[in-house]
Length: 342
Ligand SMILES: Nc1ncnc2c1ncn2[C@@H]1O[C@H](COP(=O)(O)OP(=O)(O)O)[C@@H](O)[C@H]1O
Ligand SMILES: [Mg+2]
Image (cartoon, rainbow, N blue to C red; front, side, top):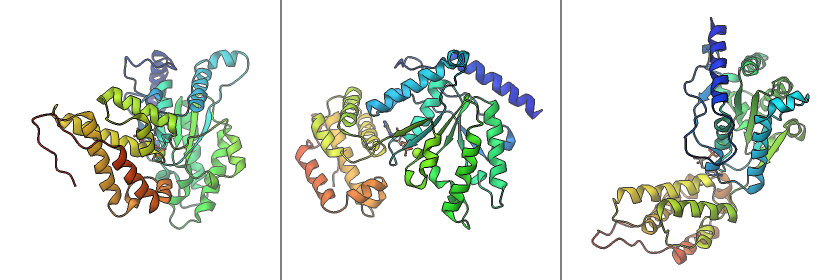
């Protein structure tokens, strides 16, 4: 019975994948979703989480060379049958390294969307068992399933794989699961794209790195990426009241998740003002709110770990004074009330 369900599931996916040919251009007319309805077999529910992402690669702002690598990967994957007719397989194992909030998880899910494949994230809480051999057996179950079902299999925060066992020697457990995975990885057919993400590459030794056919390092956004974000935001909201260069200055060293939080906040404020406020004013308020958030419990409560290390003391004060220098004061359209400010 479960075999039948799985087969139907596989067929549905093949159908889905062929309806949505891999897309490597920026066409945005029809929203895509990786998969319509989660249909994981019961036995795998504790080992895998199936999500239905909708963000595309073009929604991410990435350094040019990474976008180029990803497009090449997608193009290769979409022409797998041509490669196979020449006894070649497309590459299908990828390691993504980078600080928190730089888009690793989003990238993995966007690949599923672009390829029209289900997006399956490995659940370490269900995978890692307390008995020797238990983890390997469960991993085998996962591998068996993904070998039959075209999908993107995602190991998020790969380095945390050992943390589910309180009593375990963490590094030992990571090593055991990782080596078990690597033993299996060669056996996973190229119909399954394996993506592992980590922000602690130092926990994986070089031998592990080498096993991945594609390796990408996503840095914190640089000037080019911040400018791109600025332009996207201006396009969506209207004039922001500061120059792209000032925007870059203000946000250098922050992760995209932090930057996204600020610009989303500005957008919310603008919408809720119902035409009484400007984008410049909304952004200025969003920056103020961000400053206040950062001050709660010290800088530690906001920003990523890398930033925490960089932004204490002088750095933080410098950022604050930079803000004062470049941000317009919160101005409102005529006839509206002054919003309360700190
Ligand atoms: N490069 C990027 N371009 C656009 N948005 C990004 C980028 N990186 C992160 N984000 C935004 O930040 C949030 C967190 O990103 P996520 O993919 O979870 O980062 P990570 O997995 O590296 O910690 C997402 O909502 C995403 O929209
Ligand atoms: Mg992540």
